[in-house]
Length: 159
Ligand SMILES: [Fe+2]
Ligand SMILES: [Fe+2]
Image 1: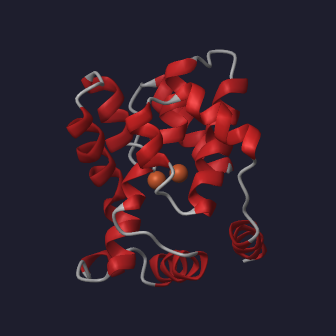
Image 2: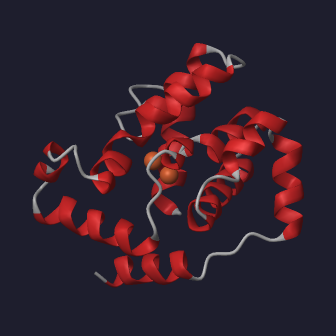
């Protein structure tokens, strides 16, 4: 519970500096930046933190940094504020995931479908190989021997 409270405080106080915005514009294309800056600030913060963890990984490369920045891009379709995000995380735990059947709720769509939505959004830009797209799509699933996906999932969980 303490962890959840820390996550909530982190979300409501999230900021992205001008230096970080510049760094992002060096990592992403113009079209990707347009998508990225549609994310809520707390989601931008999370994705930057994930990308920074991946960049510190001994195997970290530009592709992994870009994956970190873009893995949650599907959240732009049904954006959640920190309170909504806190509610769905709690509901997921309390109902042991059964809440995901209520697909008419925006918070449910964002929480459970953002990986698939992100895959579709990026696919529409037509500038990625299928491996990159699949990693976005599967970032909440098992890595199954894909070390990059495992690194992404570990970084995601730590941020
Ligand atoms: Fe995600
Ligand atoms: Fe994430």
